[in-house]
Length: 432
Image 1 (tube, helix red, strand yellow):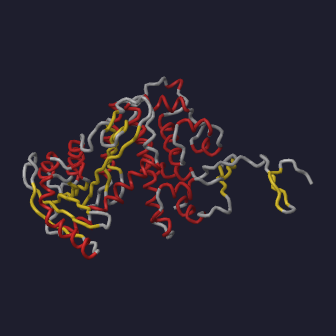
Image 2: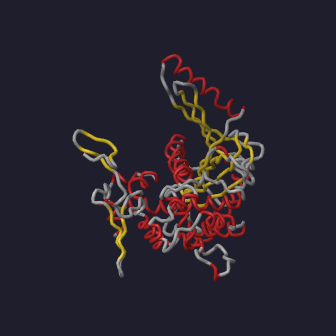
Image 3: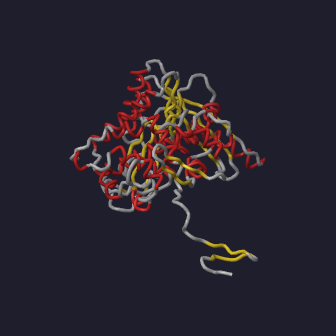
């Protein structure tokens, strides 16, 4: 019995390892991403907004190729530009990208040369692209939320945030609450309050939507960090509907005190958990007029849970507004931000330059939008179990798939394993 290349034995069989197989890539499904890009042209259109001042006689890689590589590798799970060094001989990536892999230094220079003016051009395009997608709709829900991005280096405008207790960037997202699309991603200094800049940005979004669709109904949904006087004035000026959380204060505590005591009594005396809603008019000193406030008073068994909500929904009960609309932002906004941040790696803002980090946020957002298109394609199939897949599931089950590549004079074959668990789903997506 030969023990050369033997890893272990089981009964009378040897388990051996060698490196004699043909070149295999773990990212063969990247061809599906190329097909999506060829149809929707997101990367092509955004890269065309980046001015290229390089000498054309010395250009090896176009900005479109650099952006495509960065987005595709993010979608495949490669978080950093450094990963290009480990993939420079990958046959599938070289074929799909039509040439050698762009090196990490070149990618870093690309990210750092995107300046403030280019960022603003991309943001304007981003909103215009979203507005174009609203054709045929009579209603849009805009979810607004922010998230922290801890920083550990010497990044520009990385500042200490007292609420989060850390040095960080503050990312602001406007999402479509019905489709999950990112309406606009914004990077802010770390010490920004949740509502910094958001009203002026929201106004620009509203103007673009109303210019194209004057009669569309616009509904705003956000947590208490976004409740302020300028927003309520904006809502009146542009006839917006809204459901906005409201932080508690001494006045609100007094307004709900009686109901809170009653709910607490039910639990303490009878062990009965109970929810109770009350509504009343409320006006903070800085607000231009009274607003309708709804308060949920709940005994949870672990203490009292009191939440306040401001809304101008006509003829709706407090419970319906809260559970039928407001709390859905957990799925439509908070979970979508988790996908951008944790699954498309928008928390990897480790460049020194602020605008380079803003460009990284945009690149992660492009990856998210590509995944959103892929989600839509999956939902059109009969594979119902896949309809609820998050980005991590799509990456694991559909994109991180091994295969080989075979080239002839006129054809290039991407060859997958016969044991590919989701090959029928993949076939429907790639050949549709």
